[in-house]
Image (cartoon, rainbow, N blue to C red; front, side, top):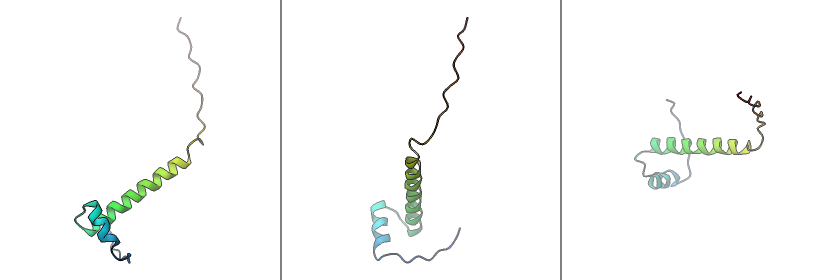
Length: 64
């Protein structure tokens, strides 16, 4: 675990804590970072849409 000093805009952390129903500052920051990470990963995946080249399946042999 790393210690970190942040300078946040006035009221931002308190507003997010209230909206999230979080009980502590650390919980709020961790939840916000996880949500941001998820959004970034989703954006990255969406940017890859239509860029994958899939191989066609091999033709099936008919059973005799």
